[in-house]
Length: 303
Figure 1 (tube, rainbow, N blue to C red):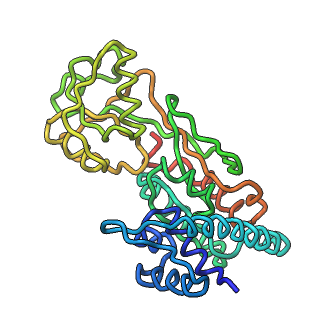
Figure 2 (figure 1 turned 135 degrees about the vertical axis):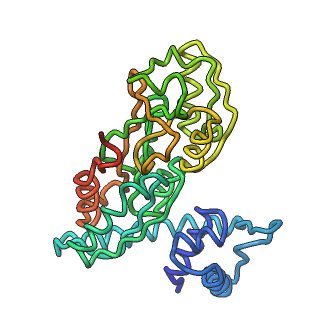
Figure 3 (figure 1 turned 90 degrees about the horizontal axis):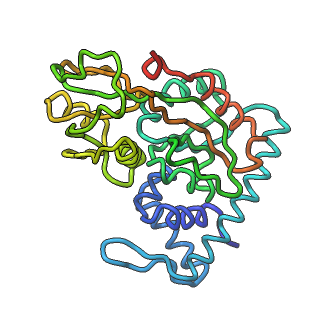
């Protein structure tokens, strides 16, 4: 008989792409995941992983088995949801994914509140890029995700995934102290031509929003520095190397030398909680979504 935990390990590798990433998602060590899959290979008498460079590749048989694992995990989730619903008490393991600024600026207080009021919930958080989290929910790799969208990029709505609105996160223009905009209460988008921009890399929603918005206002953005992490972007602004547009959530206190200026109209990104259809019957998910909404807005994301 096939072992569900070993199937879960294979499914995690198929979703996350590497043994290391699968181990992180499952809360195991990479060697433990490798051992689970090795045992599964012996049980099935089938090669499931093949070396490819420094990584691994799933064989065709492994992909078929991973798809079956996803179906079995969905059946188990349905049974667990029914049991938890009948008990009426939020409980059990709850795997969550959130993009970095939500993991930093929102989830700590939410998880602490859940642990205090519902100690039977075993919540496990992973920091995940927002463009990946919706797919992780759809594939059953996580139970609940916090994701965001902007006006130019609506939240994807794959079949089998439901969502609830959490709140709006305003974004501000950050400029060096002494910049001509620093003394103004607001700046219109039409006034942004000729600036040197500090921004996230292409493919990130913040980058795409900036490029499209400036082009719509008649300006071709001059992006001189790129960085993934918001603290790095803020540090570059503080050094006088350009201006940046950053959401407030998880940004933290601004260092000396950085001035926050409102854009008119004010850009916002919208935050959502996502889960698989039907899982909202599970008290742990319903309670977590309610707690996310109750804790919005964090003080640092609302002025």
